[in-house]
Picture 1 (cartoon, rainbow, N blue to C red):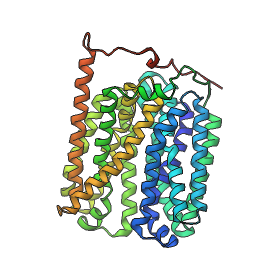
Picture 2 (tube, helix red, strand yellow; picture 1 turned 45 degrees about the vertical axis):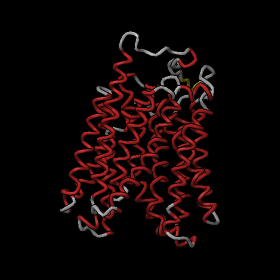
Picture 3 (cartoon, rainbow, N blue to C red; picture 1 turned 60 degrees about the vertical axis):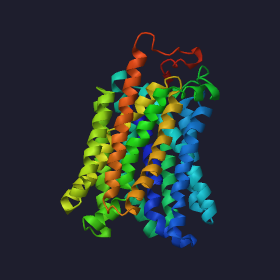
Picture 4 (spheres, rainbow, N blue to C red; picture 1 turned 180 degrees about the horizontal axis):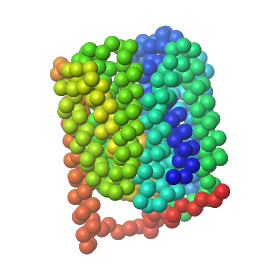
Length: 405
């Protein structure tokens, strides 16, 4: 695999760290800025909103630019957002800085996925995407715990300065390792890029992402009360147990990339079925310490097996605008984060028990399977003679990527 994938993974590591570290720093930030913890929780939402807004917008606006330059520019924006977070004088300015930090997130992964797949043979595309996402999953094992400890001992501002330093390292790696590419004047303009997202198969692929990862976040958002309330762990043990989730996610990500190169749709459906089974077993597995730890690892593995297949499927369905489609999938991932947490919260609020968010998540995973099945039916109908839609010339896929050193 090309060394350039390492540069993309470093950027993904920084992004994954800054996305998830706020959850562990909420009490410190709330205390320092004199706001309540629920109010401080809006800082998480501000980042997610930045991802949803920035992913399609920045990908569309930069579609004709050299992708190496776009990646470096996006990471520079990421560094600026984290630096401003560290220097924020108050809550409102920190809220704005977190929104700014989220803007490049989805576009970086979207453009990065196009660059990654453009540097390898067709039969290794899913594996290349999984190696880029490796930085995101490793962030849950090492980056988030280390950044949380840094914030607890040196202050939360030091955490964002540290994450900014990771961003600078990513810029250096991108500059040194990613080959230069030419501008893409043949790419569709903003209107053409957005038009590439209109077909039904694209929306079905995005809906599968929302439902599938919504299933994950319905359970994961409430995994701490499950571990302490149902499994009986002390709060001091939760950080280590969440690292097990990162280990499972890393293993699932690598496995999914390898399997998807052989069967994209088969890997996706198998991952969703596995996720459904794990979530349904959660109430049983949370009855003992060892099985609860196993459940957390299996949750990460089952969920992230689907990561690379979903990314590639969206890119295939909107082949005329792969950067925009890939970035839109990241926006869908963040919608899944918010929606899944909301649905899991509804189950808790209804009094169904501490582990009920996992069962609600299983329902979302089944919904993801249903949407994936509908997408397969649509694909088969379009493949029949006379069933294929007319291809507009302006929406034809770009030629193969050309890189120069």
